[in-house]
Amino acid sequence: MKRIYPMLSLNERDRRWKRTKELMKQKELDCLLVFGKGREHYDSYLANEYFDGIVVFPLVGDPVYLIWSATRVLIRLEPSLQHETWWIKDLRVGYSGEGVVKALQERGMDQAKIGVVGLETWGPGEDQGVVPYKLWADVVRTLPRTTFLDVSAAFGEMMLIKSEEELKMIRRSAQIGELACKAMMKVTKPGVSEAKIYAEVMSAIYAQAAVSTPEFLILKSGNVNVSWGSPIWVHRGGGPRVVKKGDIVHAETFPVYGGFETQQQMAVALKPIDPVNEECADVARRSYLAGVKTLRPGVTFKEVCDAMNAPLLEKGCWNLTPLIHSMMPLLFVSAMRFDTTHLPGAGMFKGVKTIPVVGGDLVIKEGMVMELEPNASRGMNRVNIGGTVIVTKNGVEELNKLASKMRVV
Image 1 (cartoon, rainbow, N blue to C red):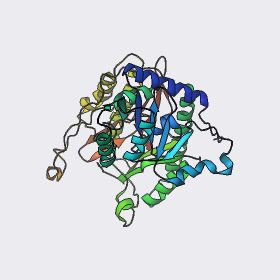
Image 2: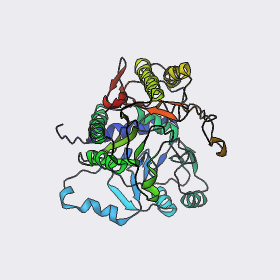
Image 3: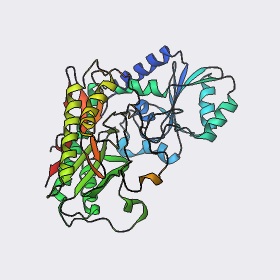
Image 4: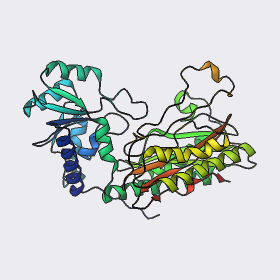
């Protein structure tokens, strides 16, 4: 695959800033505080830099980018970057309550109405927000006459519709994901360790000037394995599992090119295949095809979720992880319909219950990016497949073919 390295232009900056100010006018906001810490790095949407900082974005006047370390500020002094045009010129150290207050006071926002992105987010593991308590307590205490309104959901929904420049970046990210899937198919065979598979997949991503978002790589192997997440040896040490005949090796890759993430749910089966796993793979594939058929402008997100869930209900399967969710940002998520009643030892765990659809009334529009990731479980058997798609005028553009069904090696 030819190496290409697209970037966003100043035209894209102007488009984003214009859309952001239109949202602010709708909400009657004088300013936005956009917190970047967290999975989606919302600050980079306005700054086109990756500092996990805070963007102070007034309706009138120039924005300020507050970051936590002088080491990040000095990046702009690198000789190779001297001809760069930075989206936000006022970059300063000040990721603190004091820094936020000072930036707001400089712009006369002592009694303003300010929208906040990050107080109430919907991202995985972030439903309590990503704003540090001490920082926020300092801001609220110091600015008692300022009105703060959480606009995380509205800001995230605004981000969903991508420009042609953004879609070019998304396609590049997905191409890198295809290379990672190809590397996984090539290396997976009996006698190979999970660590070897992990290394080959990540190497394929890094070699294309891309990175990966935490958990970096989800990897599970075994004839039956109902769990999901990075392999246990990543966190606590110990030897990685060695792949055997009859296993399915699952991976979820998260290639991020230029800040744009796509995902691929790769399932590689080694013969002989358990008949239950074959059936789960068939159900997952039919769910994927239902998503491709249903996802188009004008339908609601819930309608797509229901269509993808139908093959699972028909065959008595359940899903551990979402069947579909939005991308960039990951906010709108299908139900996770757990049925752990027949799993050995599952009764010892508290709080395991079905999670309903999030954002089901979202109307699908052209330019949105979605992740179709159907998974079908029966008992301890599970198969997960899928990849990233772009909503087009009449349907979807599938970006990941290798992961769209279980592959047999």
